[in-house]
Length: 436
Image (cartoon, rainbow, N blue to C red):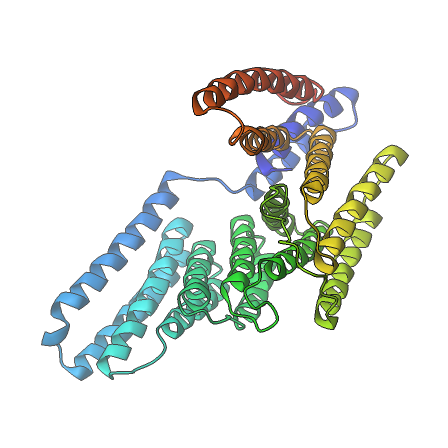
């Protein structure tokens, strides 16, 4: 559940508890105040401080670029040292004066100046190195700054730099970035310790980018065969589902928030598998290679472990328990079939469509049980995308283009009206939430 929805629901429920005599007025106010302090909020002072740090960093970089040739080598080193020292001193001064937002801006400035120092030092000594290595060093410095100064904005910049580093390595140079898992592990430890929800989402998004980059490589086993890349994609989905389940067992809310980004990746991948052309095997022969079996065993073990840990923390009715078991088993079986066998025809896509709809139904049930309107709205948005995709698949080649768009317009109007009524009906079953 998101923090805003939880705060609203807690305020309404605690009012009823106070009326029943279960909670005193002072206790209720103390609880609400504690929850309010834990919820991240955007503020104009914080936004202005971050913007000021960015503008100052850009100005410093521009000044260096315009006057670099006129400065002697010792002067250049002194300028670099003074710039970094000044930003850290300004951070310490802001913290001692209780200016938290300004201190975060100084932390951002420190990361930006560290990047400038890397580039200027490389230019000063004519260092010839692999270009992404400089970005990797910049990202590592940002991670260290975020950990020492306890700055989530600095962590977000570091994650963005790590994404740029990974993008260059895996998509531009077609080389696997095997150092990124180590970076992600260190970043996750810092994020978990500090409880940064937004940075947790960034870590999950960076992991998804890294896994996507696997398909830009030339693997000897894959040999650029579509079915081989499909097998790898299915294994990644299975492993991601297991990681998501593990994050939901964490005691840290930020880790569960980051797991939501992993779940979005799993749902997006499952949605891609609902397209018949995407899961076509091109009549290839089955490849029961030991490496594929080992990959399935590793991903399946992670998937099973995560679900077992999650099941121990969930208290469900028998119907929900058996429905969930059927859904997770169907997902695993389809992944195993995709990895171990080749097939032709449209029936695999039909099965993936059924699993995707099952996932949407399960999420809608979770949204109702937890009173989270955001989940309900996301489910109906995903269903609308699914309906549009299936319409295009079914009728794009069968109807005249004008009829295609006219029929599609009528269908979408009817489906949109029906889905909106169903959405409001489901939201009405959440008594503690206000209607949109």
